[in-house]
Length: 190
Image 1 (cartoon, one colour):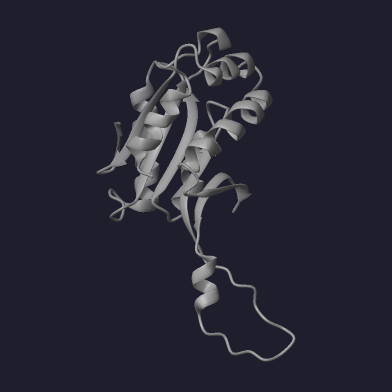
Image 2 (image 1 turned 135 degrees about the vertical axis):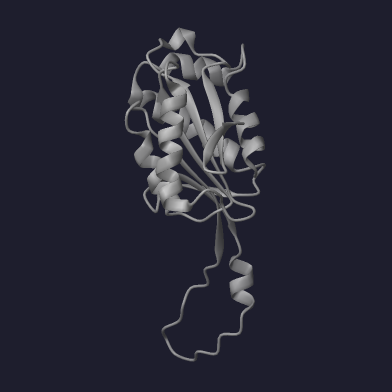
């Protein structure tokens, strides 16, 4: 899954009249409920990518990961051990790492956390006031640049999705979030 596809599916969750928007609005004002009832239920549906990927919570202490299972390939590798002890066949690829931070001043830590992870798509969802958002984006990009340099390896993307902070649940809609992709040492609007 690429950044644009993830963003498109994420935005669909907030479409007027959708069941997911109703859940978001009902749980928005309580961080725990929003995480449990919306993030932990809706985001894995996006990440599973029509069941191409499997998802898990808190693997590597990352909120949600998506991976492809390659266990059959591991089983096909010759393994001539004739004892009672044998290794279980494991082989999988991390595809998406997702972090969500409710507190509007703490999402930079999630960016730093995911800077240590290599996979095709890294996503951080955080919250910030609209005012001075560019300053926050530039600071976050500068910090990420210290970790990863100004560009990512081919076929890797890092996106930051920022929601409006300080609004009530009944104000949540398709315009609540904006997405930014890390390119050339900056977070640029996706």
